[in-house]
Length: 262
Image 1 (cartoon, rainbow, N blue to C red):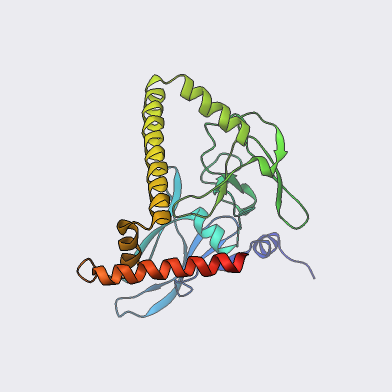
Image 2: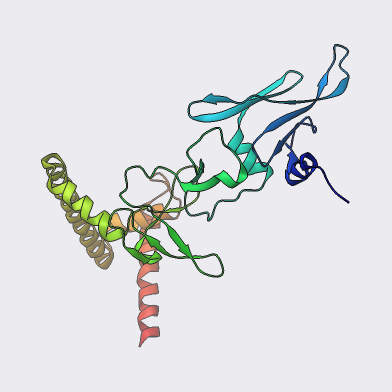
């Protein structure tokens, strides 16, 4: 049994319906979006297959899908990733689909590939390497280009996104941070002010802790009052008799604890 060349070409093309559009639109592995039927004036649908013409919008190829009053402009790359289950290599980096040959209108499945997002400012591509189980074990530093163990890369949290590994290794990040700090007198001045302020706060905390420790040893009225306030009593509820009872209670508990220790 022989097939015509046109039929062989048609059988090789894989086409899938776009979810959520009631099988009106479909997309094939060549990146072509097809409309399968239309509506007449009475609202009844009839079969009419036509190819949608894509438009270039902000370096992205888009198509307009509409059913009745519902109208949406979607990226062809996004439709390809959803319909053909194009999964990124891992979940610890932000990836975008790119055209391997650089032609934006060529959205064939063989011409699409994953590439890390926002790598124009790095000298080297931060390529990750995986083990047999798909876990990242090594990575190339985007600054120095060395292939290092994944422990040298920090796992950072991004707002609205999962945790991602840094594109540069920790030694390179520390060197760049230190160099930028040395070249910026304003940052050095702010750092000095912050250190002095923090030093004063730490000294005040140490002084207050020493005062509280001394008050707890001598059982001064301020300490007894604070203990009663921690139990939920207000200043109006605290009476001299209640403070005397609390003092005796603390003394008795300390005597019992000292005997237990002995």
